[in-house]
Length: 492
Image 1 (spheres, helix red, strand yellow):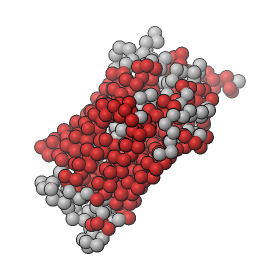
Image 2 (cartoon, helix red, strand yellow):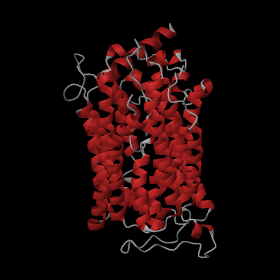
Image 3 (cartoon, one colour):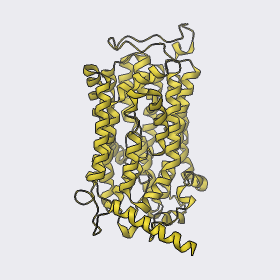
Image 4 (tube, helix red, strand yellow):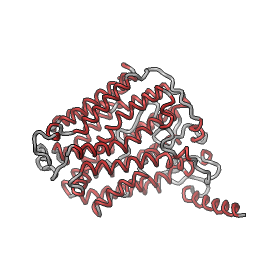
């Protein structure tokens, strides 16, 4: 009797939840049929709002943590990255049961929740940013949304459109935010970013239809989620089952670890150590972003057709080593601009890795192997920022005051005034550590075979997808062409 009552209560809860997401008559709420354009708008608004805050965030970060700015920046982004890595599989599995729309709403709301706190309470702002990592997996749900509504042959183009939109939002918004902050103050920028975030939430509520058909969901909304589905380390456990997979995963780990750390701290480094102004930082982001888009859309295809997948990976790693070494030893603004052009070319590495995996894996093993690589990258998103922050702290790369924004060419003076100190000889120690890591990655990549089957077995993967035709729930849904976001799902 008790179980029967519980089941009735559960069914009533399920019906109530369905009414929230599905209109009477079974028609999905929203404007029109589910489309890639719904996903594109959601991504653009979220990251445009965060991009506006690039300049104000650097100022608030230094004002809040004047003594250990780089260390605290690394810890904040490190905690966020680790929480995202741990939560992404669970949120993806739950979206397979409850639908995408509700989780789009959840991830966008909690990812954007810290924005208004920037001017209210900086301490709460950074605390909430760290904790928001639990829900900072919008790309996971967006890729699943796109997979729900596209055929296999359309998916590559759809993922490319989403990734290009993400890049476009971050190319344009920092420059707009810097201009508005200079002309009208940081408060206006925060208010505008908050308004855009609210617009994104309202768009999901009103305009975005549910993409996951009822027939693709479990028979009961009370269907249990197994630990294997929610285990963030599940894909990593299969890494050692094949030597080629192991080599690829080691290559990805050693190359993406410094890249993740660089993304978390580089804009702050340009502003404080090199002496870039807010406008120059915004222009740098725009130029490198545009060059990266060209590299991934034009140069990448030419290289893979002419020199092959493996050699393209090696070339990308070579550019990354040069870029990181240049950042590490460079102390003049022109050096940063030159290294930025090289950084744009190094962005071809991961798409080339993803394409190599897609080419060599069996059709029914694509998701498994791509999932391993995505798991490695997710782990790096947590470890990389923390590592960079610690190395900056270890070498005493800290400033007492922000650089002179009115004289962007003037490099601010740090705490270490002795010319024999490490920070004088090596302006950016973490970048040199990163260059060494990528050098090891290149040596490992030399042993990756150009053509090899990747016989990784995973019956649980098929079961995990509930029989759907390739409806992934996380970024492991990388397209066969290897198209991936230029940056990770990050607030900077």
